Length: 342
Image (cartoon, rainbow, N blue to C red):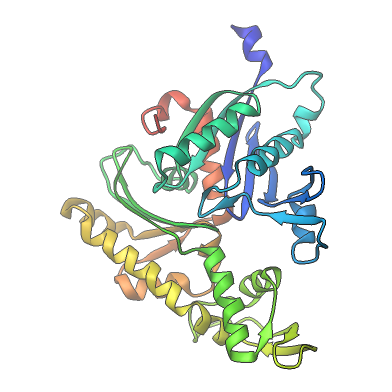
């Protein structure tokens, strides 16, 4: 048995719509955009992760960039499998191995995932040498990752805003009591910014520029204590066809994102309305925890706090909260076996 253990490596994967993170030996060894570039003529994958991300919006007709995950689930089975395989091979400790080791994996999935989508994730993992594959729901992984004791008889509410979905869950006694999964998250925010630039400034920008605006100038509120500097945005003028630049402030981004944030607020309120009264009193005392990349949007915690009249806390390093929790579940499979998805 010990010999077989020697041949087995343990990895935890946060297979996200925007980024894929992998933990091996308690360290995040891969943190890469979930994107691949494929040669249209041969069908071969020519780049993965950062390299493919740099090609986005700049390719010629022979190269296509693909985001294999959409709304938190696998949309392109072949591309996602190749991406997972190439990212696992990029783990420094596994590169030194003579033979590809068997893998014991824990992969996190959205709470609103269907059986078919779940099977797609599992089969992808098994094809890249996954001999023992466990799945864990994202809100659960995020709760473990931010240090909550999910096994105690106490209600905790977590809002995990990723790239494809926003997962809202009330957790107690190692289980999800009530949850909502809405397809409004980072990708929708980026599209909102791209559309706003088109309608307000007649400026056509790409997805990468929209993402950059969201990170550097993004805001959920007009009125911020420390507003970011205004940004100069370059793109193509829709009227003349010439390249042009405009100045954009955080107030513009707040206007662009307003409708999407209202939908997240409504989903949080709906989850609170379904929460049993005993757990609602726990949440009143402990507040709401934010995780995921969307938690970094300036003023979002204040806005959710104003809507719910509850304290809202942003977890430490929210981008890695889910993968940290997945890694902890992997190390303590016996303790957390009841919360893994069967």
